Length: 483
Image (cartoon, rainbow, N blue to C red; front, side, top):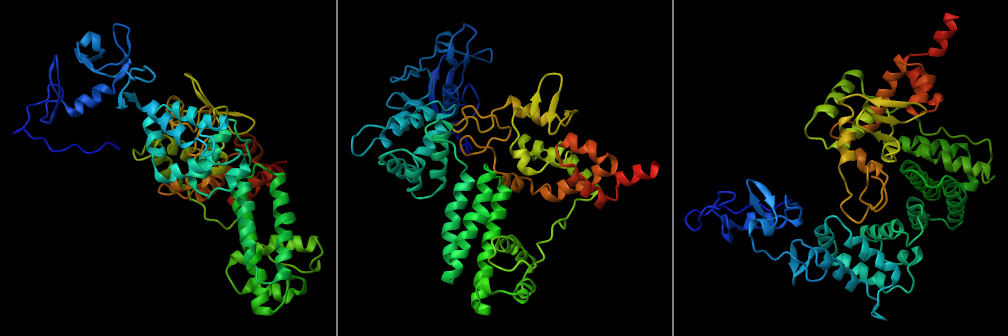
């Protein structure tokens, strides 16, 4: 965000011949006196002059920007390092060269004084940024400098080496940057995060015997399943964390309240556990089911799982209001507007929306076509406007994070899409994403046969049949009665 301007001082300064305001003068050009603000703006104006020159266009002729030669302006904007015609930053060098120099110095090995060839991609990626000033702001932070120096001190640049460094957002960002530029192999970061988290979490189990059982549950009840479905979704990651947390709480409850281990429980303990707390205790169902399958506990033991299908649903009137706001409100970005439309009009889950690529949303002059299921959907105006604006723009594309990103909703982590949880948070002032989606599916199943709706929206027919039953729209029963 630009800094606010100081108050004008007509008593001390004459009006600027460009903006007409009384600020401290910075230059006297052929047109007259130019204030400091207009001087900075002139140095940052780039493009093609009518004479054909491409570069900085500081002059003005009939209100149009022109180059130094055409305007007769004397201005030093030639970088002594790379020769580029651009705004200079320090020592006659441009922002881009200073950024590359700073990155190179931080990434030199303390042992050899040389930079690891694998780390040169960071220098190159930062140097190729559309807005190098953003990169310079980032790299000059103390914690970023500390991390880059620690990374340069590693003997080998691998995931394992990065894992030894203190965990932080900077660690995650640089790791993803190295993976995006091909230095490190791409790995499932949610899976890696779960493995580290679960190892630390299971240390909270009080009883030694139950520590072994929880460790087995982590490895065979959770990790085995997560690895088989890698890359895992954000919802699967959160479900696994909740199941593991509740399983540990259950084991500790047995130890402290009952003086028992999991291998000694009866139906009475399961009933007492579930009745003695909130409904989230039902998430121990996954642990109990695994314990039965591995014969740790008898198969006749039962537990009521955590109830599903009880979430709130946005009613029809609220949905209409949400659609109007998503399409016409001025306080939404085009990215948030498109996400809101996909939820409230097409009932799409946030995880799927975050994973959309520009192969799923095809923008052409005649139409914007959305591919969610087997059949394409043509977005009519004004629903197509956010997609057109995003396609024409470069959201999160001005840094080194996304050199070739296919994502519609680019994230802040290099090569990754926007985090679904972050997207839900952004839409929260408009509506609760889950309630809006469920409400939309309820209304859609009232007017459209489930089989057709499933093919268009990319849902499983049995899932939509459940929504149809809740909406009282039993198409199968209707057809049977007609026959």
